[in-house]
Structure formats: structure tokens, C-alpha cells
Length: 86
Figure 1 (cartoon, one colour):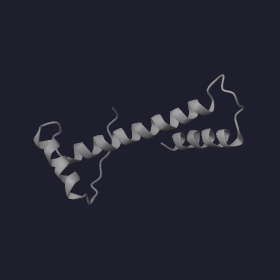
Figure 2 (cartoon, rainbow, N blue to C red):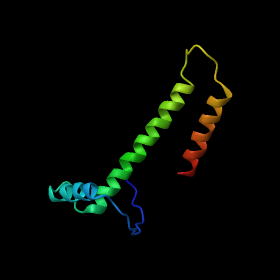
Figure 3 (cartoon, rainbow, N blue to C red):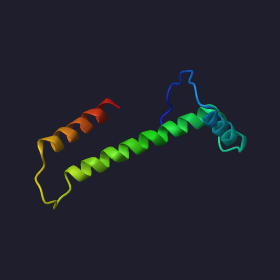
Figure 4 (cartoon, one colour):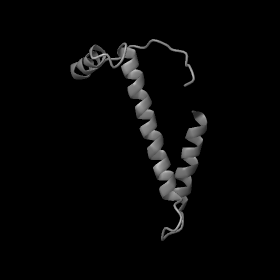
């Protein structure tokens, strides 16, 4: 994976999430809280990309019983544009 520059930010979490992060680190799964948060954000990004792909495939799946609508095309164009900004 490509190395990214890091920058410190401050976030406020409910006690339950703070405890989850601490337990995850204590169990040795991650070295520190930053690693836990980075992994969670990566997984969240992957889930969003999968959903965008699912919507794209659904809009342009072959053999469906209707033609693509203007809304389908606009949704795909928006997904393509969003992908270019990443």
C-alpha cells in the first residue's frame, strides 16, 4: 500500500467506542488507537466503493427489462466524477 502523509486530528468518541478501541489495542490486534481508526476508515471507504460499484452494475446490467433512464446515467456520471476526485 502507498504510504500517506499523516496529520494529527482530535476526535471525540462516545465511551463505548473509546473502550472498543482500547480493548482492540490491548488484545494486540493493533499497535495503537490510530491504527484502529485508520483501519476502520479504510473499511468504510471500501464499503462505499462496493456500494457505488453495485449501483453502477445495477444501472447497466445487461438483460434487464427496461432502458437506462436519465437518472441512471446521471448517477453513473456522478460516481465516475467522484472516483476521479479520489
